[in-house]
Image 1 (tube, one colour):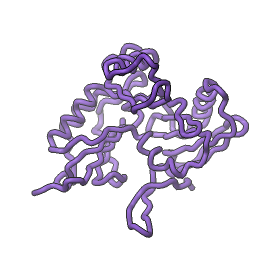
Image 2 (tube, rainbow, N blue to C red):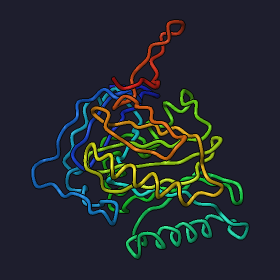
Image 3 (cartoon, rainbow, N blue to C red):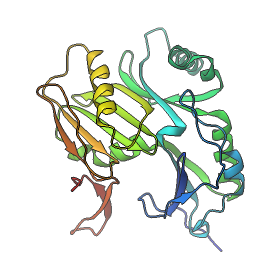
Length: 273
């Protein structure tokens, strides 16, 4: 059977389970990992999923030629970095990123695969760390199913990039709540200032308030009159922000929207009920 030359299979991996769907939009049912499957610590991205991925059977493979992988916050670590003028070539960039993550997470970072988006000197850009064993397991999964690994991204960036055009705040924060973890990013005038993840209990407004306050306190000049957008929550809960800030709740998942003119399905922001 000939495969489509362009159709993409999207695999979403989380600490609790996974989903598989044809195309870039969410659609596959969430499947729980078997009982006793390894979970992540708070100190490092998990690289203990190779056993699960080795036996994972992907559906809809026959119609696809490429694989997109989306990792939730339990499997990644993210921070905003700025490359100094003296960092020029790929080797220097890798050494700089290793040092930046080691400074936050310790020696565990030495065994992580770390990548950052292209950026000019001293321009803020997100950097993402993934366990080397998990990276190898994902690559092996793609090879086993004869799929080209097209991209590997975080669920935080996946959700944010699909709603960013509809987020009107010039000064803002975006929080994605997932099972057992939250990822929070701050931006000003379309530039990321900081991104952090931490363990999180569902609907823990005090913890989210504290994390937001801690991150805002480190930003100079201060961020005032902003909006905190929150996604992933089953229902809204109390969050107390500093004066001048407001909260806007997004749908737990990006929602498919059909363009009446083109018929194309995309995602857009939908406020949670």
